[in-house]
Image (cartoon, rainbow, N blue to C red; front, side):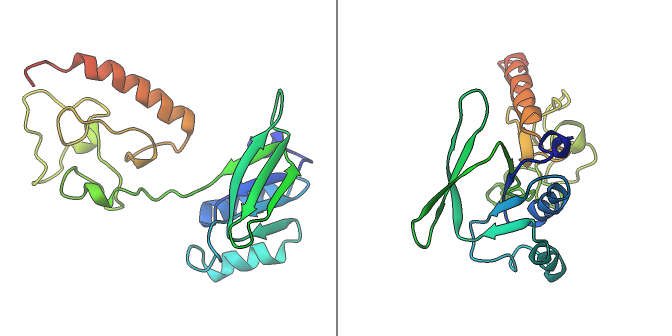
Length: 190
């Protein structure tokens, strides 16, 4: 659907992994070109050679390495995007109405290992996903965990770090508002 909304317009894809590559190749089919902003100096650390070749061979995709977004501007809608080359410090501003942030699908939850139950890919297990989890994560309370509650009673997880997430900001915001309600339902003597 997003591709139809920006048909004929230039777009920016932020990210250097497989999801960014897929978005860039897909969007290049119907847009007026795709600019990829990649923080690192190359794609080889985050993408297979085959995927890199597909980007290099597509004349509608321009890749800017060592680049970071610095501003978005516009009145009623996005009109301009600016990014900085981290090597030279040069800032480039282009008229763009569509930006896709594809900065990764890997959770950065290593710091939670040993603290919360994680699945095999590092996503935080919550609610019913805790059923059947073997020690050291048995649920310690008589009540069942709430749908967004982690293996540590009273601690909740939402958004992209949670197992079973839908990878949408709106979903994470919705989950956050649900957690506010759930927190108020936790018994005081938990």
